[in-house]
Picture 1 (cartoon, rainbow, N blue to C red):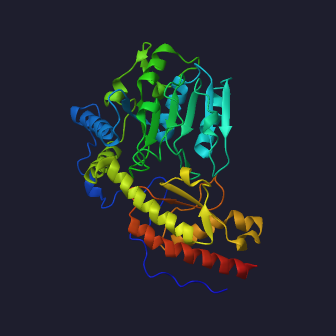
Picture 2: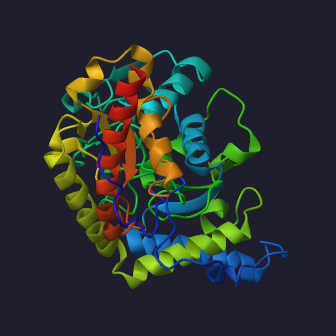
Length: 391
């Protein structure tokens, strides 16, 4: 079987991983020269840098003054676990699940917190559960953008303004990518390593006034580890939301976060980042639409992620191959492109159906995506040729 010739041009930056994601264009270690390392983060300079991250985050994302912002340990996972363990249990819970992270939160709530009144509204990869069936007398836990499925909620219109329960939103691949309805979000979490292209290990936690009220009116029956505690003597503890972190942060990672935020400001803040993502998704979506061998995992265009684009192979040739070959198709393509230096880390998430996952966030340049597409076509034709030869 003949194969396509190798493309002449490779992406200048082949980093298309969905987390940790590509650094901002023009990034270098020189941007970390002012890092406050070897010093206490409690010193006025260290604390000022932490507060600067919080204030710039508020400004770029348009987070209202009614909401509190903290830097917390453990990346988005730590921030989300902190919220689940500190806030849930006062009323029933609706867990929305359509990809691996939502499934993780559902497992935590059912099997570890062991709450009784829990509904899991689940949809397979590529689809959303029926948002119209959500019970807003319950607390509601959901991911805004499913990084491992390429499926997102289309907007915040489905969230009731007069809800009785809290909304807890895992926004790790949505913050800095979409204009979030902060009045509809009582708890929001994300990590620097996604749309910002920052470093791992730190999470962001945003609490609205209804979440603060819950903290002060309800005490969970289970013990809370130190890194989860958001109250002191039964009252909301404002310290973590004023740059006084619960544990020792990496000041290198903090400096890198500041570098990312300053870059975001330089391109027009959230609107500028959304414009970058729009250009990237427009290019990627157009390539998928004209490619006969690949399609979106997300079945509905209205809920298709613009950041984490998940793809499945639909070429009829693949259906004739054995199950092991089909299960390994994403890895085969990704390994070929990795070996060529054309794309790194684009295999599907380990819990997702076989295929590809290409990050289209603001730190990825459209020109690199356009250089990638011919390589994807080359890789598929090469896999087919090798598969035919093996057969």
